[in-house]
Image 1: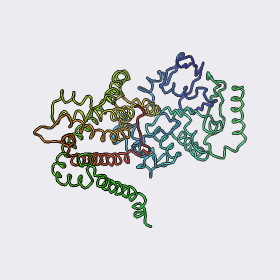
Image 2 (image 1 turned 90 degrees about the vertical axis):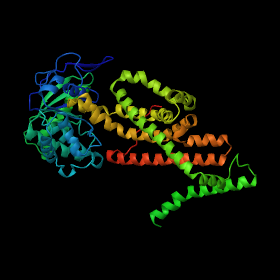
Image 3 (image 1 turned 30 degrees about the vertical axis):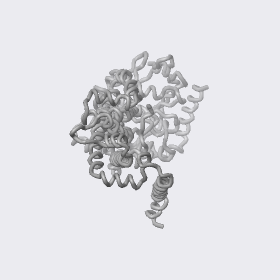
Length: 245
Length: 267
């Protein structure tokens, strides 16, 4: 499938791949290669100009409305400043028409998942950047998604916070096994999190490599210093370098 | 020194001292050059006039306040409603917005007599003039607040299949609140000016009289001290309304948890 924008800028060209349910896939590539465009096409926010894209055997926008429970985590936390943490988690449930009593139970569960119980009644501007992103993750998970799309969610965070949230995400995926599509330009992060990495070349974005990550689960922080981790990271980096050359 | 007394010295004292100085100079100047009272009355005469006509000034202030607050209230309702309409349809916004700007640039003193002719002498005419003058800041800020929602938030709502109504109610309207507060602060001052201009053209007849009437009548009668007192009363009225609106706005903004003041960039 391909995506072009009005005016002849082609963002994605000939993307051809399949992501099985329950897989965690990362998409890496140079800036401006259309990684976010791919994610937004899967979410049904934009339509491919040619080719077919199917989510749960449906066109993305239809899938989002009828079949697949989809959540999206943006680069910024995108919280509503006038709502408390609890109110922000309530938003997607209310939009989906979940009954009030069920909402409270789900919110409590999601808060517990990301360890923000004590901050339920705080407002976003009272939280740190890392905590805001945690709320954003909880908001994505509170609807119990089957497909979770993440658009460089940790790019704006410092390295320690990023690693903590990587572990958090890994743990949540291990427990819930949603299908994850994670866009990042941080190769180590992609290797650490995913079972599979799609490497996109520069504009127009196309898949230049489809790398399996053979690292066993459950993964933990020690993995970062192991030889196998370094080898896979090197392989992905090589692919990327060759694509950009 | 305690912070309180420090504030008194550094913030409150200088303007008060300046005020006393100016009033004293004014009093001395009127006496020294023997300026006739119908040209520039001395402060003492103004205070005298204010004391003598205290009842009339108070009732006129109430009348003007009623007219201004009605005009301001109408602006809040109509400005927000029009902003909602604009936020839902780009084509309606493009069609009507230029005339809203036109309405703002037309000098109010030029159309006030027409308004009085159309809406009649009395309270109605005054409220309409006040409304016309205070509508634009509300409209401009409401429109800006309703349409300048961060695009990612709009996408977030789309991802969760929000209806147009849900996006309006849960995202656009709350996003517009800080903008509306800014608009209201500008509009409330203008509503008083509008009411006074309206009163200069439209009397209340048997219902009573407002500050605008007192200013124009006493200027005409060369009772300048009384006119000055009425001008000062209208200034105090403006300040009172502004302080009330500002503190109400601050209360609302505190609940909104945004630190920045939002404002429209349109003229």
